Image (tube, rainbow, N blue to C red; front, side, top):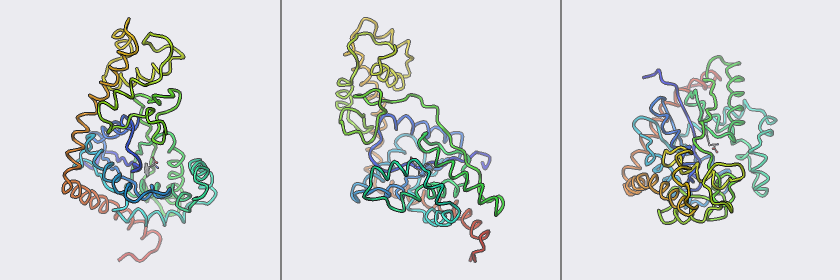
Length: 330
Ligand code: TRP
């Protein structure tokens, strides 16, 4: 105890995760064996783009229950909803006074999102990375598992630490981005050169992790492949390679084993096997998810305990900051 390195990461409660998200999340959850992990459902971040309140509330609960269903142990790790811990918003304000307008202007995610939502370029979209820095720094996290798209935000958090610690001494731990070695890069089932995406409009492109067995198998049957017949990872066979990666990740079989298994068979058999392997992999998690979601009292109790744990840990950091700044701490 106390020796373990600390991990923090945030998950946006927008949309049900797809298969690619699933593999990433399962990898993060596995880190709980080796590290002191804190995972947050970041509701405050999600409102930088408009959300439907009814959907948002449902998705916050869904994301929370999903993480537990995937194996996150709320006793071993800390799992909480960001908005349940007011220290995030408070440290975020403080850090905003230690972040330059110019550095926020350089964030590519801000530029992308403001292009996508030109009618709602709100200040929160601009200061989003500061709240993210506050999330990380409050827990004194050593490592932050994120995707490549979030690395620029981690860099910003590191700059804030350097600046703040430079003035006030060792207040914050210097965090480091942790890129999980992707088990498999999961591409769209319809356009296998594009990543599987939460916002894909084509209903057959992404497999949602709460899709039922029939839907999953149907999506695999409709997956785009090529005009050949051989199941192998040759160049130009993006569709087949994608299905092989998915099948391999879901079944634990190597590419060689998969090639041997489908030698002389058609794509139909292969697609069915891939779909079934994914359904088999997801079914226990889905059952666990249903069970947890139905137990409203348990979920609420977990959320409360998680929030209290998060509050207690972060209060120490916040008070240290307040003292350093010259605030009167009561
Ligand atoms: N911005 C992250 C994303 O969109 C989510 C996030 C919020 C986060 N706070 C964080 C990730 C803190 C890591 C650490 O994926």
